[in-house]
Amino acid sequence: MTEIQLIEQGKNNIYIKREDLIPFSFGGNKARKAILFFNDYDNGDYDCIVTYGSSSSNHCRVIANICSQRKIPCYIISPQESSKNTFNSKLMELFGAKIVTVPVCDVKDTINEKIAYLEKMGRKPYFIQGGGHGNIGTQAYVNCFNEILEFEKNSKILFDYIFLASGTGTTQAGLICGKILNNTKHNIIGISIARKNPRGRDVVIQSCIDYFNEEKIDIIQKNTIFVDDYIANGYGKEDNEVSLTIDDSIKKYGIPLDPTYTGKAFNGMLNYIQKTNIIGKNILFIHTGGTPLFFDYLRR
Ligand SMILES: *Cc1c(COP(=O)(O)O)cnc(C)c1O
Image (cartoon, rainbow, N blue to C red; front, side, top):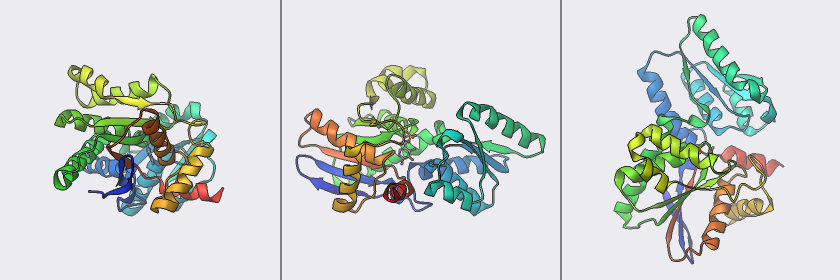
């Protein structure tokens, strides 16, 4: 259960759920997902991990760290196009992950070849999709949604809105599935950090469909709000306004945000609140982590 704290009392009450403080490897949504993936790993017959992501991937850093802790060989396929040195990539190296860097168009084939090769050598690879995508990742955020309900019950504070940074979509999908399962009234708003609509929203919807089944498609569609107005200059690229929001957050609240995910989403949320004239509401922002990226931001 991660903490929920009140950070702003003004036109609206803004709360923040500190997923970044999950106590392993700088936390974040990838840590919450990874714990469930490794439960699945333990329930099967596996002896190594294969996953993929860029050099700034929080997912790959957390997976590599669990592997180093448990002495599990970890293979990461990484696109050349985003392979600059970051604190996350330094950590992956420190954890001894075996990183294979190839052009982005070859990532898929390289993953398949690596898995086939390992199996040929008598190994039992467990594959995790980038970003911890898939039903297990979705389940992690159904669990998170249940924690939010628990907080509401104990505190008697009800959230009208839940905002979060939405990327590959399972974090948002998990929250939406949790909402549908519990039949609540929260407005869950994913702020896109890269993808445009309709694809961005479609991927979230598909993750929900995968988690349930086709029967719930209407209710899933009704509940999936994916806002693509605040992606600034694309994946991993902020604009000046996002930078100001990041600086503001650490100065005012002592909370680090990053340019790729949480800073963009928090800034998008503030804009969205203003644009749609939301007043007098309880708003929850999910801090999805990415603390090492905050330090990359400081170093520039
Ligand atoms: C991966 C990531 C996200 C996006 O999560 P998805 O489940 O891929 O949508 C948001 N914030 C941070 C810090 C992340 O690392």
